[in-house]
Length: 159
Image (cartoon, rainbow, N blue to C red; front, top):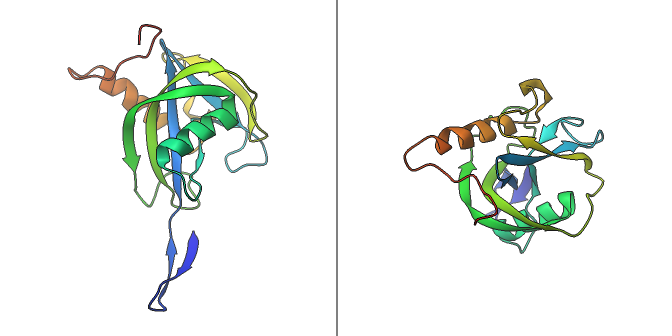
């Protein structure tokens, strides 16, 4: 939580803003295994992180993808906003902007927050207990939306 004092002197705790990305290529998703020193360390997660001052959520998303994966990327659209204060395995009540993203070109390396970077077939994901936070639920929701009449695309080289 962020402790804040307002203009009128009142104090309150505010919530953090994070970005999480569904990085999809063909029928695969790019996941990171979080470094052991992080919350939910050694678990798979969507690429993501905290939004910094003076950046938009889209700018934060592209920065986090570059930092954690070394990929340049293109944001396809906003997938969802999660603002529930009781998210599973969250210690800060983060509000998350979840983006659907297409990877472009790998030009760098992962930072020290990433133990492993791996592409998974969307039909062969790690077991639920190996996921950090509520990130598996985002992937499952994406898969559900693909099956609807107005489904989301599986991103491939044709886009």
